[in-house]
Length: 372
Ligand SMILES: [Mn+2]
Image (cartoon, rainbow, N blue to C red; front, side, top):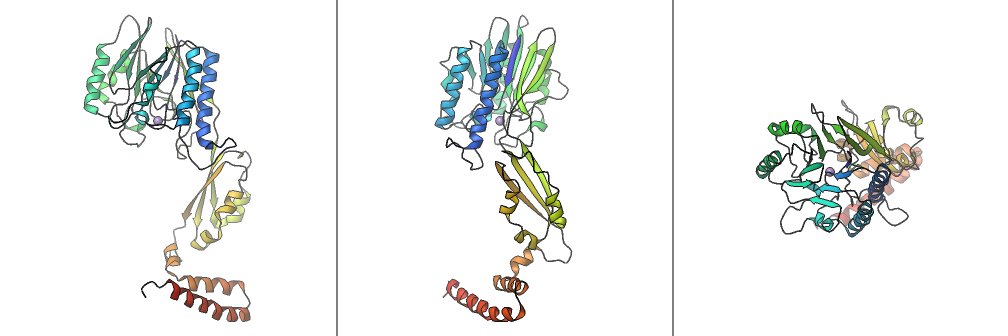
């Protein structure tokens, strides 16, 4: 028996204010592209079942574009005649009963089986039972649902558990309303053939369990996610279990350090090739406050001209006795400007400009004094 397990596709996610040639947010388009790549590979692999372990959409109420995209893709999946089993994640579960669960839109597909009501649901076929535990807000209820799962194990068939949660604190995503699977119920995992997990955005086998896997997300929902490998799992269940990770192509993310103690040399020795269309994060380290004013964000961005996006983090040098950023802020703008002019001009020119500058600041202060 062969399954494709994928997860956390977060359709509709967008970020970075970059619009592509079709007028769509580029990062949003990246997520659609990642999803399409998985579907293309499913067509080639032709598994017996397809499973998705939650966070199909990024929000409980996705945009029209995200819904339209999903419906188009599910029409393609439907035509493959392969059962597709999907559970709700925390991102697609409404927090109140006022809004209807979005996964309901797939109820009328013949080959799509959805589990989203914050309760255990058994989805049964001739050779396998899928025990689905979608995201649950209420942990006390969750326990009884896990027990239902336990009672419904079928010794005559394959048993596959599907959950969207963190198994152990290591897999917490630091998001609102995450569900942590109770530790004392992990013993259940060894009684089933495979445990398909969603929620954690990296691929991996979980702890000491040989049959428990996170598929990971198909794209990164945060620039803090520095993983450059995303994909899906091809799970073969014969005498033994084989889990084969397939990588898809995603936009790379690269990080650079520029040590401002030796700024020029540090910039010269950057390897800025292979940054076309990439997401770049540059850390300026050992900055002094004056350098921080001199080093323009635009100039740093220009070093990576072909990148999709460059984000810059500034880290200040720890100083002893030197001026710090706070000191600079305490200087008046007038003093700071005069210092600058003094550095840049000849003494006679400076004397002439000095009085002009002082005049200018006096009138500026009059205008801006709103206590009058
Ligand atoms: Mn997720």
